Length: 116
Length: 113
Image (cartoon, rainbow over all chains, first blue to last red; front, side):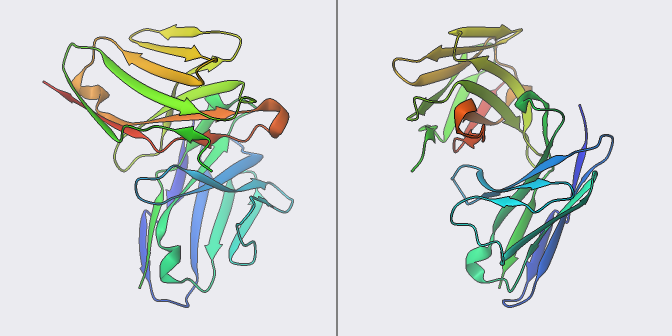
């Protein structure tokens, strides 16, 4: 299957700082990427859908000014958590879809963010 | 509002036996269902899917059953192997509601040798 690379795999930061997470499709072009968030023992919650060259579509309840998403190329999408707070500590995972089918949805390995 | 629920956080099965992972949903508009498998430190990978027009789909050792009236689906793994030990996520989408994929909480399967 296709490969999606996500970095960093874990990050610890101080409250008030910003953290950038990168998601790259290594062997295919991804016009659409998805960003999810997962709290312990809970499901993967869709945060936003990122489309190359256009603004991301955020899910209800997700602050677009806090979670900045940029999809400037067909192989790279970034999520920046701005002014991080301890409640932002979570597991963030990206995915990219080849075509329109979810069978062709490939995930990165995720980023565990801890805000002190 | 948890539209997709996996009520068993974990399941332990003996090698060679059947593993049955369950998933319930509340949204009757869901028309496509998928199972993903996740190993530690890796992202989920697609395992098997089923459309709402079917009630069963089989792929090798993996079979997914869909009971629309009960809003329930299950994943059967026969025979279970130690390499099947992973977290399994159930997911659903509704084509007339934007097609967004909604995930369950996951069930951690442990297959004992």
